[in-house]
Amino acid sequence: MSSRPLPDAVGDEEAASAPDDCIELRAPARPEMWSLVRMVASHAASLVNLDFEQLSDVRLAVDELATACSRGALPGCELQLVIRWEEGTLTVTCLASPVGADGGHDGELPLGFGPDELSERIIEALVDDYEISSLDGSTRRGWLRKSR
Image 1 (cartoon, rainbow, N blue to C red):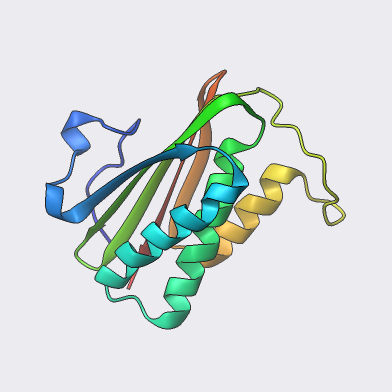
Image 2 (cartoon, rainbow, N blue to C red):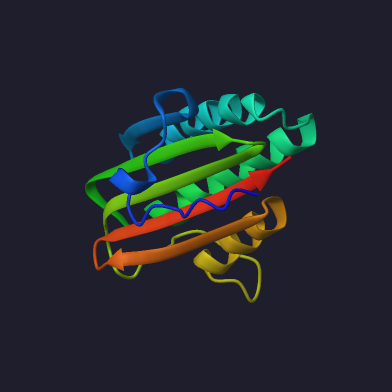
């Protein structure tokens, strides 16, 4: 696992990667864009030589990360992702802004789960390490790490 610290926000200069081991992606924070996010993360994961099951884990975990970070997205919300690979490890950092403080949810959830807990339990089961937090009242940040 990499000992390099994760950036506090996408684009931190001290955590910037060389151009050949990093993909930056910006997209509207809408679920119909998650297929693009999954495809890019999956390609980067293949560069780390993750096996088929691990690639599937990354696809689902990135989908949940995008969902968790963009929950409560306000009009014009943008998802910013930095996908980095090095030494057998894939790291995905995600920012969503602007998001509402309550992160509302309309669908049915399994008994005992709130919207954030469900996404976090799924991510936790699929990756080596992760975190989802609020940077301020209108920006949510998450990251995950998966190693060979």
